[in-house]
Length: 310
Image (cartoon, rainbow, N blue to C red; front, side, top):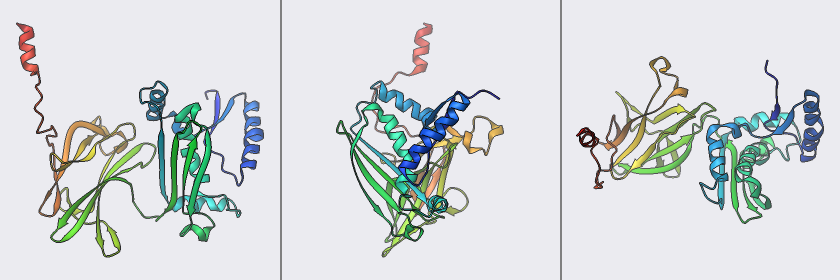
């Protein structure tokens, strides 16, 4: 077994800040001294490639100065159901205290030494989780010493069976006189996979219904279309007004023996799309996503090669 150089604890969840400080200063540091290693407390996401790249680009000024930041986390009720079992004193067992520690650590780490909070304003709601003695959600606004503002929103009261995502685009279509909505969303999935989804929604009076079977991606219609791929890559899922189409990366594994293991999937430089036909989103494969109005001159590589030979 290789020797440890650093003992890292992702988070310390205790009923009070005083007990947490005691646990870190005495227990954690004592264990580290006995083992002869350094002890640190920090979110393990710090060591992921994507966040290390962002950190480096902030530090080197490639991104520019941070003037405002937003962090959002929306989780289902499985998280608080497990947490409340730890103690009967649940006054401080809230979404911000338990789950917000991860967002707090990441944002302050990314912002660097300049991120020194001087004021915090927060409000909570407890309509659903009050029976467990905790909150549904907490939204907070932090103001830093240099004037930077940061909004952190943490919710853990979503239904256990809700397969939701963070939706970033809404499209309106009509089936006759009935409006139907298509949502494009991002779902973090887990530590090895990421998902993007095409979701359908209808509204009847004051009721929302997720799941309208208007997506044709095979022999039958479905209510939801999911792109699942490696967490180490990015994939496109967006509405292209110029093409009248939802455009997405075509995903594939790097080799045939990894077929079906979506944690290895990534874009293969081809694209698929959904077009609205006869009240359905119809899948079209291998579409041309070049701008049809692009008039800029270009150099034909074949001609360049012939000129170089001559």
